[in-house]
Amino acid sequence: MAGVKRDYYEVLGVDRSASPSDIKKSYRKLALKYHPDRNKAPDAEDRFKEISEAYAVLSDPEKRQQYDTWGHAGISGRYTYEDIFRGVDFSSIFRDMGFGNSGFETIFDRFFRNFGLGRPGWGQRPMSRGRDLYTETEITLEDAYRGVTRDIGIKRMEVCDRCNGTGAKPGTRPRTCPECHGTGRVRYARASRFAQIISVEPCRTCRGKGTIIDSPCTRCKGTGRMPVERKLSVDIPPGVGTGSTLRLRSEGETGEGGTGDLYVSVRIKEHLIFTRKGDDLWCDVPVKFSQVTIGDRVPVPTIQGDGTLKIKIPPGTQTGSVFTLRGEGMPRLRARGRGDEYVKIVVKTPTKLTRRQKALLRELGL
View 1 (cartoon, rainbow, N blue to C red):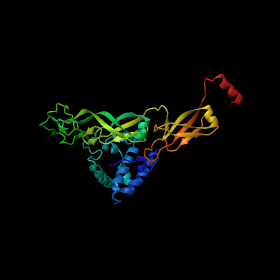
View 2: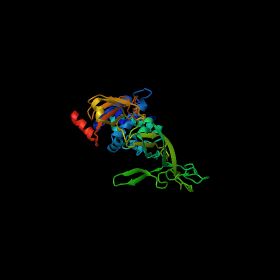
View 3: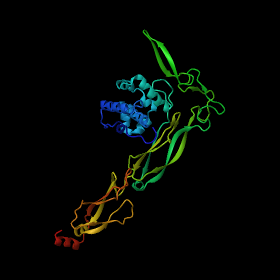
View 4: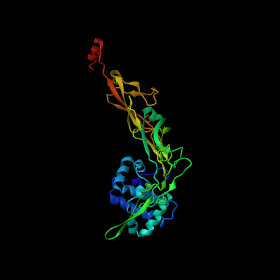
C-alpha cells in the first residue's frame, strides 16, 4: 500500500490485547462491509486490501509477535508480500459470509496481481523485495531540540553496474530455464498406495530462478548484485527521542520485486544538565541558603543555551521545590508546541564558614 501504513490494530478496530477470536470477528465484519462485490465506493478495494493485510499479520502468532515488537519494520523487513498472506485461511471466512470459493478467489486474484504476485500457494516464483536495512545514529539533546542533518554510512547490495543486474556477462543474457519454462517452479507427481500426490516445488535445474546463466558476470559472480558503501544524508526532525525510528524509503537493498527501506534509529546522548521525560525537561538549580531565605531572582539554564531566563524564588522556598517554565521543553514531534521545563531548587549548604559567619548563624538561630 502506498503512503504511511496505519497501525494494524487500528485498521481492524481492536485493542492490542485482542484475542484471536476478536480479531477474526472484527475482520469478518469489516470484510463484509468493504468487499468490492458489495461496496462500490472508490476506496472499497483499497480498504479491503488494508484490512486483509492486517488480519493476515495479526491472525498469525509469529507475525503478530514480530509486529508487536518492531511495528511495520518487523513485517516488511522479514516477509515478502506473498509470505504475509501464505497459510491464512480466508476461504472458510468468505464461505461463511456467503461468497463461496469463487468470490474469494476472484477478489484475491486481482489483489495479488496488482502487486505483481501470484496467489499464495499457486507455485509462481515470488518476486522478492530487497532487504530492509537498519542502522543507528547518536545525537545531542540540543540536536534533538533544533533538528539536525546527519551523514549515515551504510553498506548494501545494489544492482551490479557491469551487467545491470542480469548476472550475465556483458554481451550475453540469461536464457529461460527449459525445465520450468521461466516460472521457477515445477510440478512433481509421486504415486502413493491410494493416490497420486502432486506437489509444486522450486525448479532443481535453475534453483527457482526461472533462468540459467551460461556466462556469469565476473564482477558480481552471476548474482546481479554487489556490495556498495554509501553515505546518505538524513534529516532528523526536531523533537525526536531515543528510540525514534526514521524510515528512508527505497534506501535499502535492491531485489527483484523492488528496493527495501532503510530504518535509522536515533539515540540521544546523556545530557550534563537536563533529564528528559517525554517532551518535558528537568534540571536541578543550586541556590544559596540566603537566596531561599529572603527570596531572589536566579538564572536558570534552558535548552536554547542563552542563559538569560530568570525565575523568582519567594522567601521561605524549601529545597526540592519545583518551578514550571511553560513551553521551555522539547518540541512535540507530531504536534504543535513544546513541552515544559521543570526546575528543582537545591539548597547549596556551605562547607567552610568563618567564625563570624558561624556566630551570626547562631545569633539568628538558623
